[in-house]
Amino acid sequence: MTSNHNNIVNSYFGDLIDIPVYPRLLHETSGFPNYTSPPTSNAICLTPENYRLDNIIHAGRKADADGLCNSLDPNTCQILFHPDEQRFETSKIGVIFYGGAFVDPRAYSPLAVDLAKDYGLPVTIPIFNRDLASYQICESGRVRLASLAFPHVEKWIFAGHSMGGTAAVKDVASLLERNETEKIGG
Image (cartoon, rainbow, N blue to C red; front, side):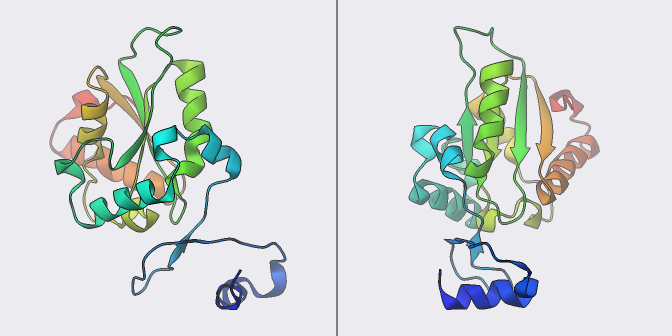
């Protein structure tokens, strides 16, 4: 851990924190921290193999920053969790889970695996620039991406952790404003 990071942590929390924090470096951006909370090793193990590497997640963050998520392969800007087709019929309900501020999206893999493996729900965890889902002023466009990845899903459950919940509400509100309620499942 760098002494610069210790200074940042101490400036926010004083001497209350005695636990080492290992930030995952992002890119420098004025006004925002240049790190995000890394996923646990367990979360990495539960993340689908093609999303485990940092450079894959960083590519999704960059695509979001460049406004390219809706024009690229739907696998680029979201982590996808597929239910076991041997155990479950194809679900018409899926989950879009928006992560909290400055939390690596892979940190939510244990939850997504439980939803997919135990309940048969397709799950997508969007990847956002700076790991800030609610940074967007308007809707994120992630319903469209989720629908491209899981075309059989008719309704989406919108959920989120902390500020990710704000982004989920923004996307639902945008769908309601356009009277596109057929995609809203909860």
